[in-house]
Length: 238
Image (tube, rainbow, N blue to C red; front, side, top):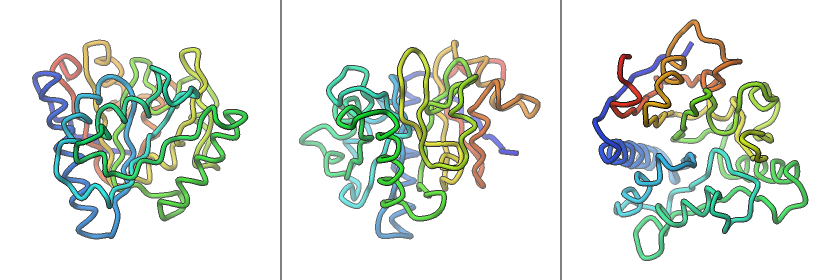
């Protein structure tokens, strides 16, 4: 059973700043121990400000491999693309973060979501050591329905344990996602949770009695303590 530590902040700006600080510290720690650092980041609107701040930090970005934990099966220039969001924030041209080695999820350039999932699994296994592959840092979001990455409740994706990636289906889109074994293998896992709409999902996440079938985010069970960065609206009453 995973243990959780909640760090509560006041505002979205504070949340972004703390997230950027935690990611930067994780990169420094990994590079103290190994030649390269591998991090996996979440999509969505909540972390975008954190990535913009992080990209301005003068870190050894040329030794950092950046992945996404999941991606919608859309073109890289689509407004809903997580890769597009990263390129406009963390990887923005003419700032330090642009020197990071970004490994986007292959999407519509391949014939099908199944082909994309297979290609992404091969990419992750090639860059990250271990079985399952081990990331130094994993940043995850939490949906108001209890999903994380693209492991949505009531779908097949949360139950996939024999592959590193799979297809997630949620909110009308097919997505490519890392599976629970890979999310759980990360050396450090941080959930970023913002807004009162996430309050119930966060309460369920940290409840030892809650089912992972209803709240797939509970399938993330790393060996280390999970840090939950939450703003006041999301953490109120916990």
